[in-house]
Image (tube, rainbow, N blue to C red; front, side, top):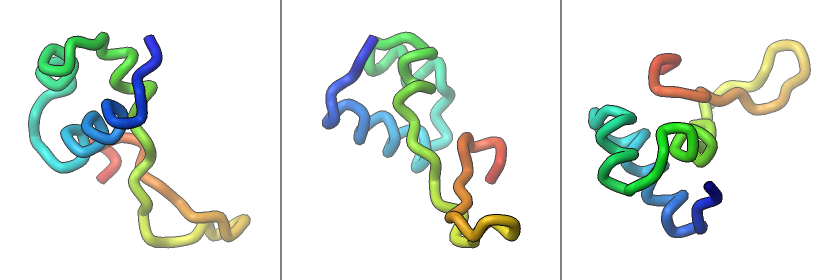
Length: 64
């Protein structure tokens, strides 16, 4: 399921800025957990990759 940009932004806000579970966010937004994970954008880590210099990012909350 593809989500629109407004929904994607709300999913990212809820995912990164709350302690709400993935299941609860998905239920609230009436999407599958898979669609939620597909919509999450990495959060910048604020440091470059030591090997290539590209910006590093956290792909999920567990990595924070």
